[in-house]
Image 1 (cartoon, rainbow, N blue to C red):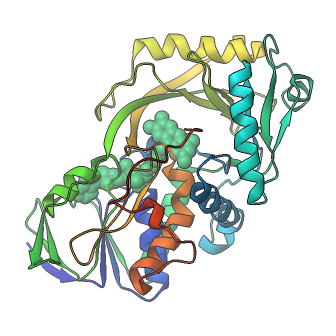
Image 2 (image 1 turned 90 degrees about the vertical axis):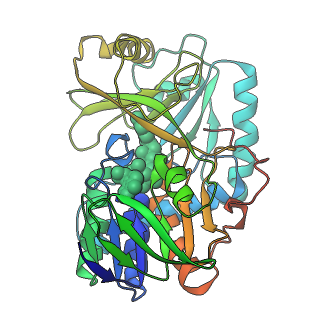
Length: 378
Ligand SMILES: Cc1cc2nc3c(=O)[nH]c(=O)nc-3n(C[C@H](O)[C@H](O)[C@H](O)COP(=O)(O)OP(=O)(O)OC[C@H]3O[C@@H](n4cnc5c(N)ncnc54)[C@H](O)[C@@H]3O)c2cc1C
């Protein structure tokens, strides 16, 4: 049992906690990151590394334009190769309604300068040789979207925190948050250690609601289960993340460096809860869906599959900012996009926490919003 003090405490050693901790430390704060298990033990270590600015919510697009710029420069910032690669994202439209919704989204995205087009089915075939174009009307194509390695990015940030006078505590399961009046004072872990700080950030991903309750705050984040698989590596044949939004669709990308394919689908209906059990259904369905899009994958073998949580907010947008408890902040509810949001939201939250405002106004993501502006490109 020990007592320690820091300028800021971050609960959660996933991408959001690691990135925000790093940018707080860069601003001169002594940062402690408290992680219940080990870094990337939550959603971050289970994600497939896709990064895109193709969204429909104005603020999300602006945040992602910033994040992509940061990913481009992250190897220099962190002094490590994070495997950033701009292979693009291609969203496929198989019916008129989807085509129209992509065209509407493109109109919004272009307002912020995103280089994005609705391209013909033939052009989709040129970008993805061997693509099955049966029923395909075209696709929303953005060449500046990309991919990176979630482990390398998160560990890169955590190493940065340590270089900047901070500490990362593993097996530090936060069980209690102590307040003095309406202000946060300290947090206690299961093994009896107490960490004092005037600033505590809830970056507990799918478990943000549980951490909120420790401070008497309702944080409406609910996990649901998503599965993923990785195949053996083959010679490079797919540049972009290919996204098929049909009810029995899927999304996958070929890892730039290694040639493995990695991908997921969104189950219908959703599977609530934070279970990480992988299912029989996924391992039979997902390869079928991938081969339907790219028949040349028929002979490629699956190596592994696993499950993790999307951390859903009521409107599918992040929850970032102050809470009613003074000094207690939240950055959670990333709704399945937290890896790509990590760099930008990390820096913006560090600005907000240290100065009271951020260079991109995050107030539309505040905890006490109406939840009325749902994200259409989830
Ligand atoms: C299959 C799958 C594919 C995905 N693909 C993508 C993708 O392509 N692109 C993308 O951007 N996003 C993707 N995501 C979503 C992304 O993984 C998450 O949005 C992101 O990792 C959330 O990061 P986080 O730091 O908020 O949460 P987490 O990574 O879950 O980190 C939270 C941490 O808090 C810790 N914690 C919890 N309770 C406590 C406690 N009491 N005390 C201390 N620590 C605690 C946990 O152990 C955990 O490590 C995917 C997710 C899944 C499951």
